[in-house]
Amino acid sequence: MTPPVLTFFNNKGGVGKTSLIYHLAWMFASLRKRVVIIDIDPQANLTAAFLAEEKIEQIWDDQTQGSTIYQCVKPLADVGDIVEPRLQNIAPDLYLLPGDVGLSGYEDTLSSVWPDSMGDSHLYRPMRILSAFWQVVQMAASKVQADIILVDIGPNLGAINRSVLIATDYVVIPLGADLFSLQGLKNLGPILKSWKNLWQKRLNNWNNSSEQKHYPEFRLPQGKMQCIGYLCQQYGIRLSRPVKAYDKWINQIPNVYREMVLGEAGDTTIMPENDRYCLATIRHYRSLIPLSQEHRKPIFNLTSADGAIGSHAQAAQDAKKDFKDLAEKIADQIGMVL
Image (cartoon, rainbow, N blue to C red; front, side, top):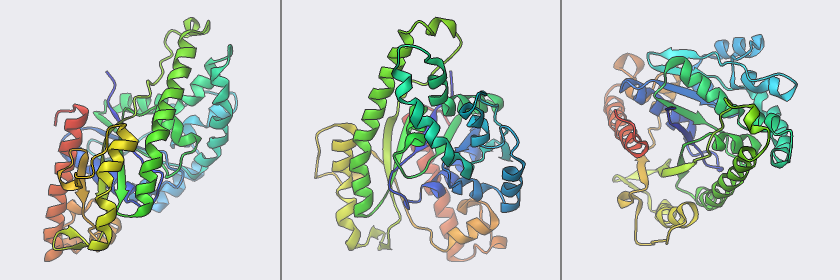
């Protein structure tokens, strides 16, 4: 049985996705779950959160096979094959496969083989390329006997993200309290449904092909892409409630999520605070974020020596409870025992 692959995705950027994954990874590790983080965003912001610039520069300059997600799949763009990933051990039970700005060049390779995967022959190579991220993810998980895999991707609907979502079991949608996040949510549901259906056609085409029997050990992802909920975050707070200017956007989310993502009947009476699909409302920790980045540790691990004193110390403890609650809720949704 393979560990669950959980991808955080919204085609609208600026919703705090990378910070969210960073803190959840640390929280799952603190709860004694072995975590592998895969940074498949060509901007590599999540990698920068975990590793010092000098370390990232060394990894990128050396271009050692398997040292980044791009170095794992790069040979496929020529005549080679997938390379086993080399993970960075960040902390006990916490491992990272770094991102790489060079990954953006792999988009063309994925785009070109997408139509080839529906042909009548020579299907192995296209299917190998399209499932490459899943293959790498499974190799990484196997190396350290991971309990869960967290994946970060960029805010777009390109070929890279399509291949990542094909490799994904569960999807969490982070949202800001604004019009653009709401519009992104409206786009996301139909796109995920389309990608899921198109991949199923390719699986069927492969399973019915004459080539399939020649590769009995070639496994493919099922493209489950099950949305388990959304997160609201990054708004101003007054008296523990979103400021009035943002209420109109937040309060539309439950209805849009049901209609556009789940294909259910909408319900305009449900608010995020009592919506079973709202995994959490993540508060904005403001001045704690720079402290977290400076000391390269999650907010809830900041101490007085790091500058978390007074109200900051209390906020750090609040963050610990918030992310522990979120980790427990996600674990429950994906059937993982903590």
